[in-house]
Length: 383
Length: 111
Image 1: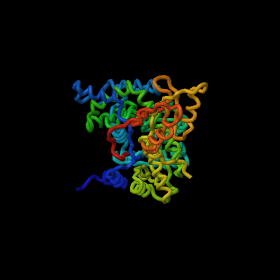
Image 2: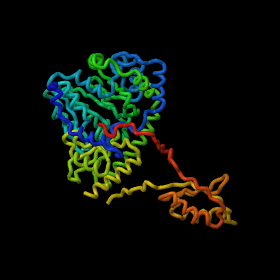
Image 3: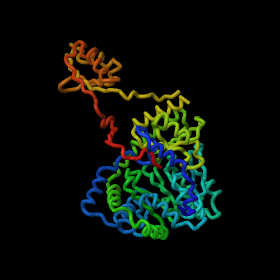
Image 4: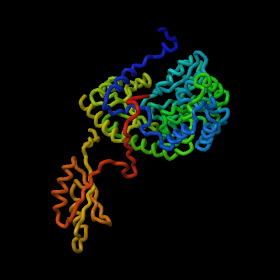
């Protein structure tokens, strides 16, 4: 059957076959999961159940429940001192994935470009292409802790570049930026009159310093589309609730698309998200503490067994180099899976500059991590 | 060389209540020292209450621990009685909560 050129032109994913291989195997220790291993806190689940019992089964406003939008703006004001109007500057989406898609469709004309630091989340390139834009990848490496520099942005800006899509803390590298580093980036952004689509989904999982939202920097709020959600920090991936905050005209444009394509996010998910925002600060801190413990273990252990790994500042991923093996990341991942039954994600999935790396998710129990390291070590020694 | 050691997955831990006849002038210290000197003993505490020492022992199997109790601990002079409790599941240790979900509901791999 003929499919649209736009979809047909999307780069095929060689990773899909590897995923199928992993999903077909039993008794695998998986460090390949991009979601928390914690179950959603009970009081959040209880609120969802209770809302169903009370008959909350309808649509909500296209923009999302006003109470949730108000709670989000109050939260952002208290935590980061950013002020948004819940009526005009907030939209509740079906996860950050939808928000990302809406943002690209709302801002891009055919052929306009978006800068994307690479390695990056798998959807970044495709959402730009599906919106008719052109992604320009800015390659980063382990030598610079996978951080994009203001110079790279400065050199790539102009010539039809509409903005930059920046995800921090990063999936897959865990890299994040200090306030000082962000200020240097913001300066270049302002110089070239660009937008920032700022994916800060992992903001609560920042370990070594306080997270700084791009929108909180001086003269940046009006040029930032701030994306966040409940999936990672609150262990609520299945509820599919994200949100976008930004200038009223941009959020209005995104809402226009959202009302025709999604109508609204699930009311059950929104009810749960509201409960999480009100009463889950302690849960978030407890999960963060445990991720941090695992982070220190896994990065130390990877380096000990010979896989060079930078210390990620956030999220729950480590992104070690497997260069010493002489294998491509895909071959390494396949062989490790078949010989030692450990699953991880080949770096190829996150950009062409990542073929010497693999993504290791430490959203897995401490015991699993320990056993996985023993098995990876065995694999390396048998080579 | 790797610093990472494989932890035998069959490690067994037991909490052992030990009742002791204290020695004149030495009290419990001397017998406690004899007990905690064994490498199998990971912790040793003098407690108030119905018994005297709480001894935490690790071995590679239940039999390993049982042999230690029978051959070393119970037969020691001044040890009147022991009660061995094998650890079945860890819920929390040193402030760390260990959760045991009945089923892993996530897919094995995702972005």
